[in-house]
Image 1 (cartoon, helix red, strand yellow):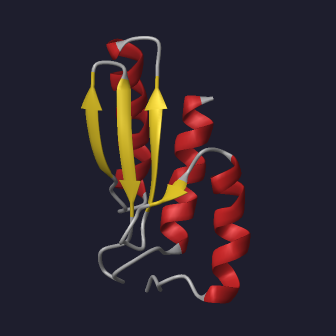
Image 2: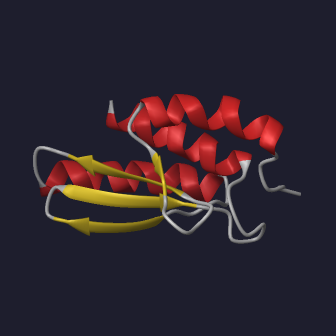
Image 3: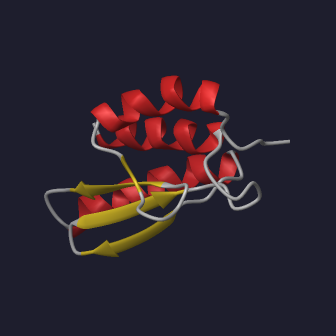
Length: 98
């Protein structure tokens, strides 16, 4: 069972993400980041690669795509906020965008 991040686990999991461009969503226990690619095909291809991992891990992002930009919000709805799964998927998204 996935659990909401505790104060003790929150800092070591989230600080590296914040250093890589992720930020807290105002008024919500969630993180967000805008990924910008060279064109629509690259953005859509990245989304497809992320979708494979999201499905494998049964953890799906909220995302919105316009042309070459994908705005991503991560939270674990089952726990009402951030979990280790969000940090894991955020790291994978960053790696796939690399």
